[in-house]
Length: 335
Image (tube, rainbow, N blue to C red; front, side, top):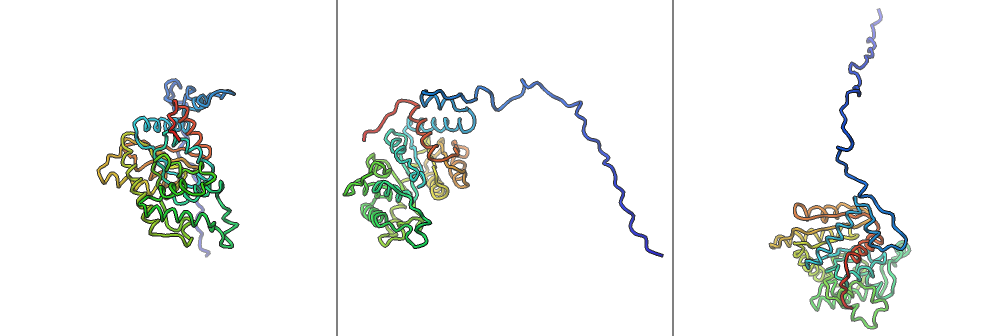
């Protein structure tokens, strides 16, 4: 007798019935709270109208409101004589924004600048030759990448001479460019020289090995270390004064400056400075982890305001600058 197989499972129909919709509760649209109304919509720009009209015509939602809010924070900081510190990645200089930033410095919308190490490379090359940003792939195969003689020799000389004079790294390069003979042909493009001329703190925060000047024989790592550590303390002094309406902007630095800023905040607070009621912002073409957390979120948690604007530096920075200049009559610093 053959063994009997397992009986086939019988398919059962679902016991539950679909929900009926005929007794659903509704309410009038007029009673619902909505996040967007037509009053917030954009207005078409009219040919020949002022730039302020363009700004007023931006939608009053999301980034349109963020731009206005950040503009108001910076104006508030200037009126209260609180620091307006711009932390700049080197890309910001490389895409041609030095003239815009120098103009903001002269008008009182920048009280201090923080750069990463590559910032001094682009600033020096722009001042001396009017060009920068070499083709890495073209030179890397032969080992020629980063070996421009003037950049390696003169920047290291500037740091060493500044270290002897007990200057920070930013002031060392700014002074060197301002006093260099022959005078750099494009000195008007140098952010560091402009800061030296205006007496504004410019700090440079270096990770050894990240910049082309570190591979040259003229490099003095001890001088670099002392100068950049002094600059960290100088930046921390600016951060200590942010309370009561100051602003810190991180523009185009994804790692170094957000980390440096966070440590400057904790140092200032550890020493008893009330770093509260201030604003931070991150402007970049992507919102990376460290700028979002170390600039926009953690430092202002429970005590300030953080803003994000996403887009290309070459558009965002002039747009913000235009918003600041159109806000009220400018108070331009003398050259």
